[in-house]
Image (spheres, rainbow, N blue to C red):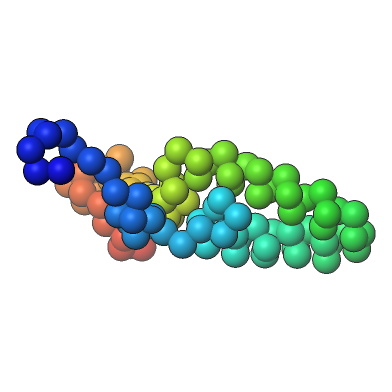
Length: 102
């Protein structure tokens, strides 16, 4: 509304700004959940483990993605770019990150 001076939120904007969600979790987490559940199922050779572990892992992801839908993607980015190299502690490379093996 032009003359009210209030901001109005549009639910379409929120829907377009969110990542792809499957059953309340992001697509990446859904795929990781499926892979982990299949690994546990193959390792245990028990169908009951697939029924128990799948929803349990999904519930953890649902709680993580409830507040921030991109939480899993942010954790992946932090793991990719966020950590420093541990060889900068010794001062061999003037306290800079160096991935040289020698």
